[in-house]
Length: 202
Image 1: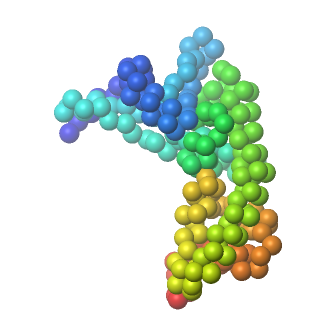
Image 2: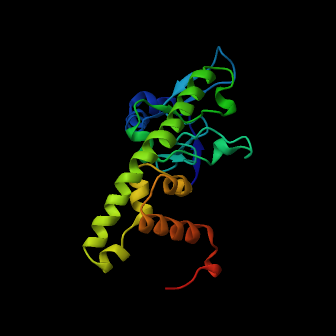
């Protein structure tokens, strides 16, 4: 099947992408000058293609969700250090998928970037510390239900449900005082950072 590139404007106007963006609570910007920049309902590099079957296809969803505040020691971090969809959907306002990118360099970049900075601070300073207490309670309840229940506790899934990236497990552990919970987090961090050949079997 062949595809023909197509502008996303029609799909945004028809409400197809607008509804999806509203559910995800994201938006994008497009245009390399103040006079042509426009608000989109998707990141500027999301691709739309019309297939020869008459159906509309979207490609390149890698930057649908906004970046965290980029780290200065990590080049182009805005391309891969992204906020989780669970967090973005629960945040107080929609965020720009194109924040900290060249797509908004000439239009409204200060406001869009600042909103992402505020969201990142909210995640780190409020969501994660609050969830630390909740996680300790969840683990306690799992342990009380028996060894098998505790052993099968899905730690990564629980963290993701709160919109927290697994790369924040170290920060999450900082706010936890219970030894069992801290130990479990340390084991999970070790497993996530080890290569498959280095992992110890059960």
